[in-house]
Amino acid sequence: MALNSSGAYVSVWKILEPKSDACISVLCSNSAKKKATGTYKEEFNGFITFIGEANRKIRSYPYEPSTDPSTGKRAPITRLFLTEFSVTGGNTVRDENGYAKKDDAGNYIHEPIRLQCYDFRLADEARDTSVPSAEPTTDRGFMNIPDGIDEELPFN
Image (cartoon, rainbow, N blue to C red):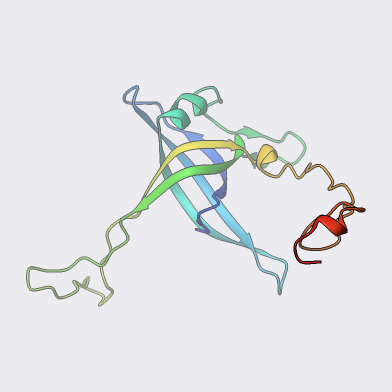
């Protein structure tokens, strides 16, 4: 999953019925566009635990996705930009001697990856690029020295 310090975009597909008031599990997916082919590759598809502010905000959404009547395809509940999250797990499981464990097929066994989200914004809000345009500056370089005070400067 393309997770970095600036956040991650995800599509929300299902919100499970909460088992407590403290957190809620949300089925999300994330994909990235390949520049060479223009196709999308899924990077993550799984549950993220929403805690704290994210838990409070996500409960206002419907728990099941809708279906587009014209195409019959399932549409995500919403698109989110995760602003505060943590990733744990994914480490190779080791035995008591420190050797990596393998399954019957010879593949290394890894801990499950656990994602927790603490806050988010709607994806449309995160992509808001309305930055005020910079006004043209009249600076002449490093220092902006007003005209007419050349005689008062110590390095003249």
